[in-house]
Length: 138
Image 1 (cartoon, rainbow, N blue to C red):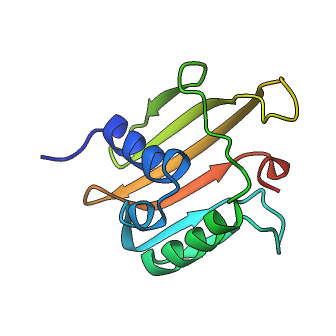
Image 2: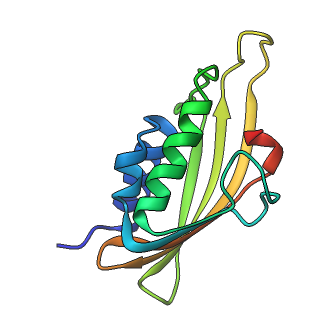
């Protein structure tokens, strides 16, 4: 039984944003899967383009390790998303509004709007393009 776009998206979200588990995140991708953040500048801490499950695993583990001082987690009650299916059954788009609670230095919540385009193959992510403002992960 193949997974629905919602099941795929929520599994990806839990593996990455919520649990920051690079192994679980990488397993969401095909062996030759591609993860892209096209708006990231070259040389940024957050990877711009990763090719292959193992590169995704290594690079995201390194990125998550650098984030040890950042205890912000998304406030799931304030955050939301809408999934848009397309005529291609292997492609869907996630329109996301994520809210992070104040970081302790300020009381202000931080809202992040982003779009992700998922291209699937055999129930795994073959290509993910993640569009967000680069300064949010500096």
